[in-house]
Length: 572
Image (cartoon, rainbow, N blue to C red; front, side, top):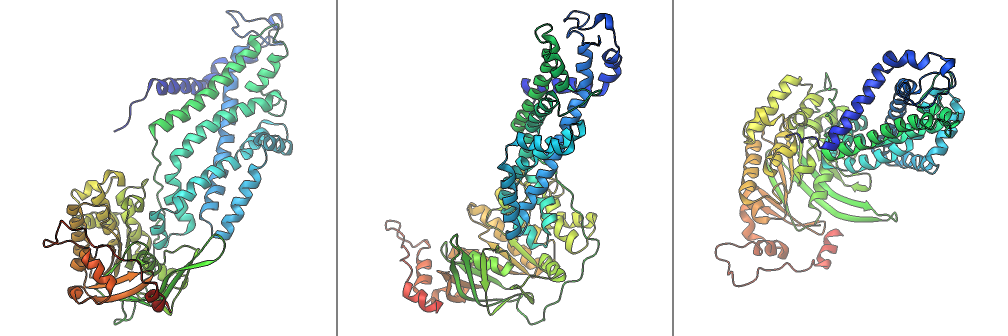
């Protein structure tokens, strides 16, 4: 429900309405009085007939101030538009480009910011000349570094969100990712800062025209009128105060508009993506090939000093068609890193090496081609731990569900929308026809997680990677999410790779359990044979799960520290 406007908001809107009316109708209503010369009434002081007095040619100054509103405001909006457009382009590129190009773009922004803003404006005004258009370009380009830094900071925080990783996994190009997923989520603070910057831009124009570097005769804006009035301020103060009032009031309105927008928390508009009209058919895998085939997987991360720290040490993993495999272990055991390596979602700081790393016949150790990227987008589904950060908050749930089908399968918008409703119904979300039009924050935590499952089903998934999908959910919602996963698996025949720290949950849901600790697989056995576990760590995990026979008077067992000698032996 929209918030009601405060008295301040109403006053700002009324003030801006007056300014807009002056821009549109000022010349038609006051143009003649602003240009008509009357030598007999030249340089008259303020009076009822002429509230701001007259200039040295007898022209009414109040009329000239009203007529000058159009040029002053249009130049301000033009310069602000240049600053925002240039800043968004430079800032977003600096956030989504590859690491090397990103550092170059960020260094260029820092270089521009090292110069004072007014100095840049004066420098550009000399280049483009002392004209109205030259002043607009000068002030506009001088503001680009400010917006570039703001946009880069905002975009960098969004670019690391999980829903952006999902978009990249679906094959979204950097440009498409920036337009569809990054920009909509930085619009609210960008709009607020744009309104505030417009106030500063208006003052800058007035300053340039006052100094003779802006609007030139016979044109005039508020800054030029202020310059002319200042020459006889002691004889007729209103000749200078009148344009000053217009500058100050309009600048305050722009600044307060930014404050009103920040209070209302404006929501960014979703940008429609251009869907592919054709999509190459996925590359088929061999009939007897496993969905996931990993041998000797090692993952290391580069630290700030340039050294490498290995977190996964020689993991072997195989997942067959329709198989449900659980990876269980404590935090930091390498479960999620292994799954992210299989999905190809690790960033440039990760060094992945393996003897084999295949998904659906695709070698994940090299960049996928166009056909392979479409195969990944259709046959691989990723369900992250936190659905709130996995779904784009600026796009409707239905729009996000349609993306994979429209982009990679070439499905029409109508068919994709119908399919989205079907998938939401499959994962037991009530009223799917209404829910597809809602934003993620209008869903509960369990519904968001089930919506993520539905998103993975929009293609033709062979593997669903569920990275701790029930964390922070109560027992009832956990059961709903697991039931939705099971229904999805039965409906599609997809394999499931379930990651969890809860061995009881994994044993009750999976066909096979892989136990990891310290980046190595310490044991692997069928879920119905957990009682035959031999490794002390696996037995310790099982002992930590209470049951009806547990003595509640005694504390639960605590896992001992990792056996470093054992881990070193496995790593070797």
